[in-house]
Image (cartoon, rainbow, N blue to C red; front, side):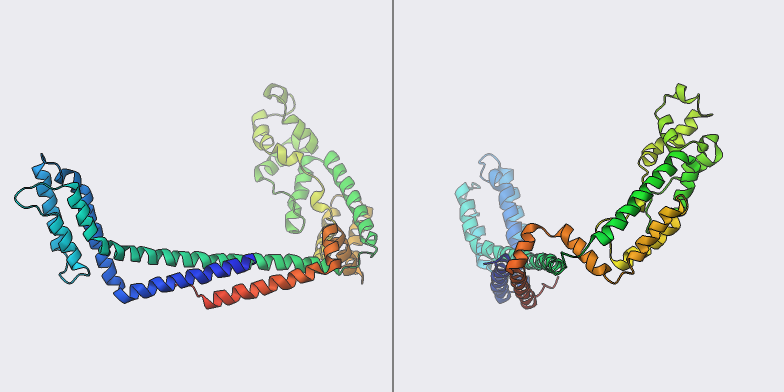
Length: 378
């Protein structure tokens, strides 16, 4: 039996138990059961509170307080309450004759007399428990259905990848992408090493207009500081180096070491980790439309710091997306990167398709169960 079948069977049993408890409650009446349960709680509270005192021969006041409390509870009950005779019998067991002495056995007899009352109270508890169990079982079926859907999506993706032409010449995409990545990385590294830091930050600020080129956001305080001080003419690497200097050593290089540390020192990690990564193309590449729009932005951005040859390579990336065989080459690249040897073997043996059929059948059974066993009215 599959996990889905287990969950469905658990829901079926939970529904049956809930139905049985609900029918039993309906036979008596929920309101009547609640009145009986409340009365049972009130009586048991009195018994538990006063048993020790009422059975103490030397505590007359305890016995009096007990009788008054019990009488108050019993007198508040309707004469037509269910199991009225059980309350009377319990009271009789706790009523003394000529003496005011009660024993533990008297309390035991009283509780025995109230057994029908406790049975009714327990019915309410078991009905609520059955409802909770039903909701939990139904939730388990929904969870299993969601898991199956996710598994089906993954299997369909494997099947889709398995249909790719694994012999396609993916180097026709890889080589120009790697050439561009190498060129833009070298150009950006040179830009970082040679350009004034304020120019680097100005460049990064312009990239905010290009959402597909995701450089980290720069604090306005850092930009303002580098634009307004001579230290902004130094390369980024120098600023990162200065940030490690002691205050006394730093005073030899900046006019105000405290302002430098407040603006630059607090952003050292951001500056030290700047790289060309946001400008490179991942492998396997994105879909043609996604890469086309990203390449358009890269052409505009890269042209702000790189030579024309590097910009031309960015244009080459954009041109790749216009190839008639782009999707075929990309699918092959994705398949090669994503499919494991085991998945390929399972595809060849037809196991993926068989598992898909099994999972879909399980989904149908969970859906049928959820349609049959509807949510409870809250």
